[in-house]
Length: 116
Picture 1 (tube, rainbow, N blue to C red):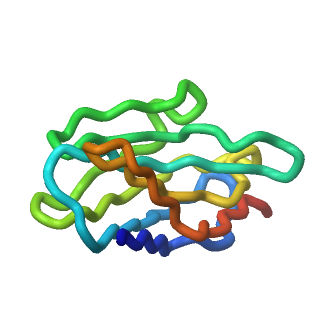
Picture 2 (tube, rainbow, N blue to C red):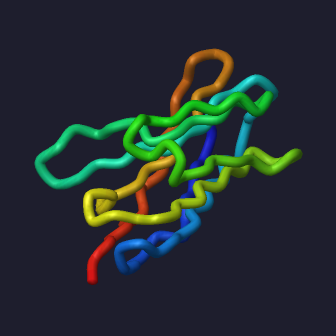
C-alpha cells in the first residue's frame, strides 16, 4: 500500500508565494511519476505540474514561469514552489503518484487561497 501526504497550503495575498510538499511512502520503487493537480469549486480537477523520478518536468500553461516542481534526490518527496500567486490559483491542491505498474494514489488535498 502507498500513502500520500500533502502539506503547506494556506492563505496568501496576490503576488505572494507558498511552497507545497508531498511525500509518498510504502511500496514505491524506481520509475514513478509524481504531480500536483488542483480543483476549484465547480471545475474539473486539472494538472498543475508533474515530475518523473528521473527529473523530467511538465507544467500547465497557466503556471509556467511562476511555479516550480522539484524532488528530493532520494525520497519520493516533491515540492511545488508557487510564486506570483493569483486569485485564480485558489483551489484544493492534490498530490498524486503513479507507479511503474500504473497504480495511482492520491493525497487528501491541501487548500490554497489567494486573496487580499
